[in-house]
Each structure stands twice: as structure tokens, then as C-alpha cells.
Image 1 (cartoon, rainbow, N blue to C red):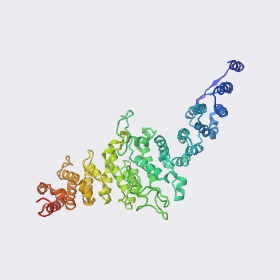
Image 2: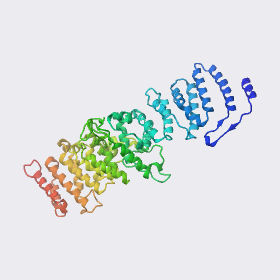
Image 3: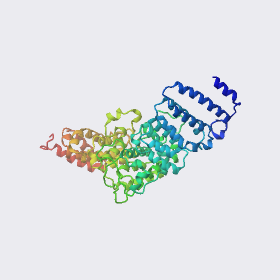
Image 4: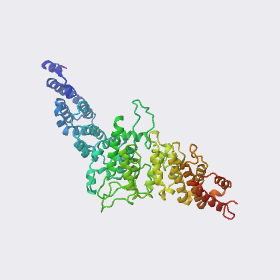
Amino acid sequence: VVQLSAIAAATPSCSYKSSQDRGPSVFTAEWLGLSRQVVQLVVGRRHMSTPGANTALLEKLEKAELRIGLCEDSKLAKLLDPALPNIIGFLATDDAAVRAKVMAILTHLNKRIRGDSSVALPLTPLAKQFANPATAPMASNFCLVYLEMGLGRAAPAQRAVVVPPLLRGIARRGAAQQETLLSLLLGSLSELPLPGSHAELEGRLPFLTDPADRALVLEWLLDLLQFLPPPAAPAADRSAEPPPGLSADAAKRVKGRLSHEEVRGELLAAKKLAACRLLGAPAGGAPVPVASSDAPAVTAAGGPATAAGSPSAGGEGPLFSPLETLPHWLVASCDGDGAVKTTGEARLRAVAAGTDLESHALIDSLCSLVLGSEAAAGAAAGSAASPAARRRPSAVAVRTKAVSHLCRSVAAASRFPGVLQAAFHALFAGDATPRLQQQGAALAEHISSHAALPLLDAAGAHLLAGLLRVTRGEATPGLRPDAPEAVSMRSHAYGALAALCRRAPKLLAADSALPTELFGALRTEEAGARTPLHEALAALAKVHAPGAGGSA
């Protein structure tokens, strides 16, 4: 106390100045001189009373704190390189006094940096520190905080250099860091340096060389393409459903901290076009490191390691294989923005011809678009997921195209239960349109004609019940029986009945009333469905013929 009084008596009155154009208020040299003496006195007492305190390190941090406090805002950026990464690195210490001092310095810096957007941050050193596996988790989190702050005020060219290395290993990071990193990727999508060869992939987009990172980014890009603007009302209901194809968590991960205005209209379309730019980029024949084709895919991402349409090391090829991007182009081709839709349609035509539709991973991805969280794993698994993680089925137009592609895959007919669920969803979902129902009936006929016999025997009764609902008009109560879509649905249903008669006759042998029902339909059936109805009756007659193994 005596020493403090002596300092105060020997110090002239202190002045205090503030300038709005410099951000936070700063003290004059006289006050800081007094502060230095007071801090040294108080800290000296604390060191004497704190056993084991890292005195030398604390003194260095206190000197750094005073230098930062004395530094003019115009010179702060130069001081922070390399001071900021070094200060953050001290968070790894076990000394509580050191961590408290570091937090005090960072709190002071936050106030000054956030208040002055002209202060540039040392992005490259921070990025290296963040990417270093030896960096402590707490230090890593603070690095990411300042990277997010600094990249928002950096030039596009600098963002394109700094962001890609940050995404290496993103699949192994926590959900909070993943969300922040994907937000940084969204802000730099249009400036990402695209590789011209496999040799350049590691240097320009290193996160695409790891299968797990690659799959996560592909899933996020698909979510971005399916994202729709939130309600325009400023006080929108927080309990509102997420966009079709997304869960609440997925929508939050796409939107990040962007305002509603930044994810609608032309701004949202520009982000989707930037995603299309990356998905359609050539890579000079770079091989595609993806998982096995037999691995089930709950989300619409991934594909086989080698397949038709995949680039070879010796020739030109895309950065992503058609198996990986077909769901993305299918979604983009249904977008409401004209430019995104045109791009998606052109790319879908280009990749569809060379895509192996027999890939189980692709089939599961298409089923995911149709069913959402109920895909492949079954309703029990989907209902067990938390509400925020439960995905909705994609938009009706996307589902219609997805079911159409499933109808072109022989392997899809035996991919139970996902494909069977997709057919019934397309036929009987509450929001199904006549066009989607028409494709669902076509998929049911495809399953009846090509599914493996053991699967058909096991699920045939369920399939037959659904087909009879179609022939009786129960699937389209609001549609006129002579409407083209209704006629087409009944035509496919009759074709499916004929296939079941040939491949699983025991399913139909027990129903003696079905022949009478179909004969009665001949009187009223439209010309477009009469031929398949005749074929179904002929096949059914063989099932019920004496000695055919069925009922007489």
C-alpha cells in the first residue's frame, strides 16, 4: 500500500482519450506507465504467494500485454504476427495463472479486433497451428475463432490459399469445428483453386485425398444443393420443418452464421453454382479415392472405388466420379433457379450414360433421396434418430427422378428393403403427385420382374397388396380413372401382377376372387391399360389351371 501511494503521488494526473475511428478506447502513455508499475508490484506479490507459478512465462505475457495495450490500432496487425499464435499456444499449459493471463490478453484483443475490421490477422501462422495435430484442443478452438474472424476480412485470393488445408482431417473433428470449417468452405467455394492434374490435388484441395473427408464434403455439397431459403418472416417459427431432403442439423450446418438474406435468391443461387463448379471440375485423370461399392450409404454420397465412368490415371477425367456426383446433379436439375437447373440438367445428361447404376452405394443414395432417414436401414432406425438429425424426403421432383433411375438398375430390384420402401413411398406418400405415383408403379413392376426369388417370396405378399390398391384406384382417389397418369399406373400394376404370376405363383394361387375381379375390370378399363390386363389374366389363368400347383 505504501508503495502504491508513492507511485500515485509521484505520477501526474492521467488523461484518457477515445477515438471512434480507432475502435476501442486506449489509455495515454502516462496511464500505461502507471499501469506498468502497478502491475509489476501486484504481480510480484502474487508470484511470491503462488507456489509453483511460472514466473518467467508470466512476466513475458505481461510484457506482451503491455505492448499490445500501447500499440496503436494501425500497427496492431504487424504486432499480432507472430504474437497471436504464440499467445494462443500458451493455452496448452497446465498452469492456471498462465491460462488466466492468456485469456485476459485474448479478451482485450477480441474487443479491439471486433471493433475494427481493418485489423488483419496472421492467417497463415494460425492455419498452420490449427492443422498441427500436436496443438491442444483449447488452442485449436481459439485458432479457429480467429481464423473465422480473419478470413471474413481477407481478400478472396488469400481465402483460396488458407481454407483448403484447414479442411484436411475434417471428418475426425468435432461437430462444432466441422460446422465452422464448412462455413469457411462455403465462403470460399467460388475461389477454390481447381487442380489440373492428380499431382496438383494434394497441394490445392488436400481434403479430397482422404476418403472420409471427401465423403463428408460430398454430403455437405448435396445438402447445400437441396437447401431452400427459410421463411421470409423475421419472426419465423423455430419449430418449422427443415427444407426437403435435410434434417434440422443439416440445414443449420449449411446456413451456419449467415443471415436469412444471404441464403436466398441470387446469393443462394451463386453458392449452389459455386458447388456445381467444384463438382464438375476436371482433374486430369486423377484417381478417385472412395470407399468400396458394396458399403451401404445412408446419405446420398459415395461410390465404388473403380467403376464405369471413373477417371483413369492415363487420361482426362473429372475430379469426382459419376457415381459420386449423380445424386448432386439430379438434385441440381430440379432447382428453382434457372442457371442452377440448366447446369444440373446438362451435367446429369453427361454423367448418366457412363454411370454404373448397379452400384449398391448409388442405389442406397437414390433411396435416401426418396425416403430421407427411413432409407435402407428401416423405419426402426429412422425413428430412433433424434428429431434434429431426422432427414425429410427430398422434394417431389427430386424423388421422381430418383425413382426413375432406380427403374433402370437390375441390382436395385433386389436391394431390399430400401427399394421396396421407395416404391411404396412413391405410390402412397401424402404429398405424392400423379407423376411420382406413376414412377412408383413402374418401380413396383421392375421389382416384380427382376428381384431375387427368395426376396420376392418373402416380401411378395406385401407387394401384391400394394399392387391391388393401384388396380382398384385406391392409390389415386383424387384422380379421374381415365387420367393418363392413372391409366399408366394401372398398366404397370397389371404388368407386375403378370410377372408375379410367372415368378411367384403361390402368392396368387390362394386368391380365387382375383380372376373374377380382373375379368370385371375388362369392361371398363381404358385402352392404354387393356393389353397388360389381358397379359395378367392369361398369366393368372395358368396359375389357377388344374395341375399347375395352385388352386383349381
